[in-house]
Image 1: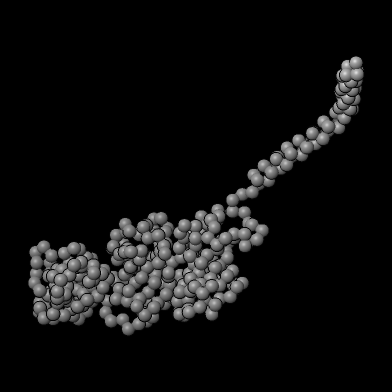
Image 2 (image 1 turned 90 degrees about the vertical axis):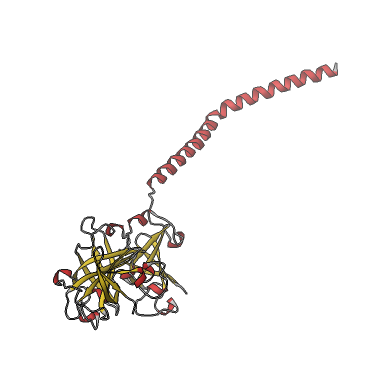
Length: 331
């Protein structure tokens, strides 16, 4: 009986507890509902806020600290920088081999020690630059998200492909940028696309005849007319020689032991086409130097021995129906 009474009391106790819990739940339901609603609402609000804030962030936005952008990181405004652009920046860090320059919208470029100046040989970039210093430089090259800078404009690595199809007799407008002892660096513009590049006019291609000094003939910022000699290995070679001013003369009367000054016009696997100046004057004649007459001994490739625009000494061998006058560089 005692066991039965225990069972009845246990069942009654369970019923009482259930009734109490139900009453409690009914009384607290509004509070629980409020808490759940608040939590869910807060979560939803935070989610919406995060989505809204994320959408407002655009690629290329300035970051709070420059240190948050590692050197070389790609950002949107990288695509807006063009090779050849002249920019003003501030030195952020100086190292043995150069300096990192901050410019634009959080962009960084590397200015190597050998590109800081054309006149000074730099053993340590710290000798010329310091952190915070303002510098004016040009964008030399862009590659794999990194930007190379130079303090020397004629060292910019332009895309030369627009100039490859220009005829060798077409004159282009150019501006002299520098006049070193060996020639002149000239900035030219491709007339159709507007693309620009910097080419070298060797001293021998500035004018016919003896030229003591490049500075005697040209000056910085001077406007000149140039023709393209060649686009080779990422370099643009130009000429200012005006063939129209020259009168043709015949090589028939020139003895074979007389040396003349010639200029390489073009090269083939067989030899080099030459433009030869008359002994006295600016008149010219055309001739050809066969590969076997470039020098004594074996010549594997013509381009290994001579290049377009090079000035050499030649003598007349004989007339040839196919090649015109055959010349020799051999004694």
